[in-house]
Image (cartoon, rainbow, N blue to C red; front, side):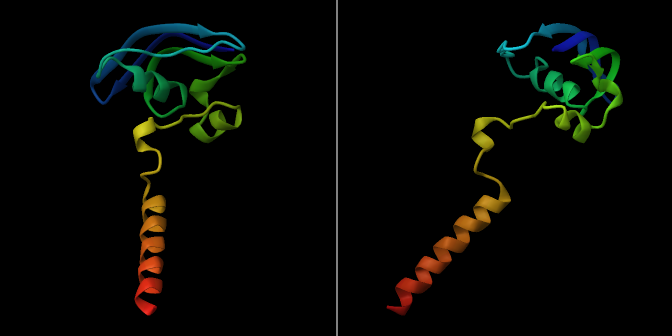
Length: 111
């Protein structure tokens, strides 16, 4: 289903991935593990079209992902989920919480 072959990715002149290859078949679950700076996020960003892949191939169901923009990759069924510690901390959620607190305070002050 998903295959990376000899992927090399860089940010500017700094190369981050050097020949990464992996295959993920239908129904398989895979985790990328490693210390900070080992290329986990860059690998996922490369798959999703969010990083400068300079060499190698990335395919999903035999579709070349390197030629597609991120929104087209997402339409194929691939998605990027932010790390857990970021969930619920978006500006929208914070503004909603602040608004609810303000409404509650106003109700209490009116009583």
